[in-house]
Length: 321
Ligand code: ADP
Ligand code: MG
Picture 1 (cartoon, protein in one colour):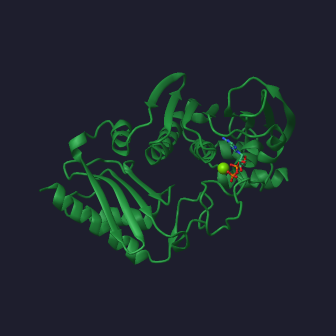
Picture 2 (tube, protein in one colour):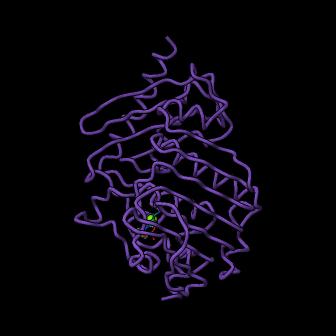
Picture 3 (tube, helix red, strand yellow):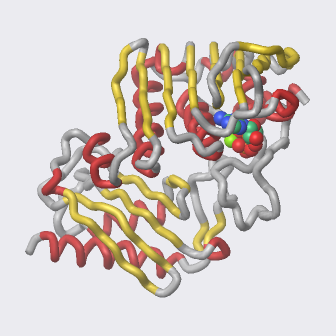
């Protein structure tokens, strides 16, 4: 099983940002209202995610770090996935490739419990000090996979990728407070706020009057969010954040539609801020295409494309007066 986990580790968690994504998504799935993320050396040395969510029962800790043990399928099948995680793959993969420690406390427990995994070996749970919720610590990523470790970029590059993931998750969950601490210094401190205020807090280069609200329906499809006025022309695509049925995605069909929507107003190599929330019936989208769960397959791709392009062009026309 350790070998399987190591292979999965290479696929599921190719870099610190992927670990951050899995851990923060777990915190969100646990119903956390507050999430703190600590990153040292771009996450290569140390990633710590602290949440105030439901916690994990002591007896369930060994299961949480075992392969394909997920508590999240319930009556849902793989087509109708509502929670972010569903494969039960992240923690065992991380445990195979790094030093993993989880400290967790459920409401009814008298103390927190801790479990560690080192190079795939589980160290049995023991009582520990800890608040309600869960704290996950990942140290020395890929120490057990030196070939993988070689593919990591500089701490600066790895940090930037982590930050991008956190920005996406923070923007798609303005009802959760986020703190990001980089090498001991607080770099992001987001209270629970409105969707618009969250976008402005995350992208400090954008001003209030530069964001246009967007809200369109087309049959079963519902698109809402905020896009930037043509005066905003950034050199990065980081401001393009797409959330489909509450799941952050990086879908090429949607990215292309945003580009087409802005084609008349932005030059090549210039990008808008576009935070788009798409809601559609769960059977109209397959989220199971890619292991990282960011690419989608739409039952009616043309309808999605038309809705995004049309909504952007109409909103820009209105926004421009
Ligand atoms: P998945 O999220 O796909 O179920 P993971 O390996 O990410 O798989 O997590 C395994 C299990 O551990 C989850 O199903 C959940 O029960 C538990 N778990 C992980 N992180 C947390 C957390 N922060 N709070 C509460 N439970 C958690
Ligand atoms: Mg998960």
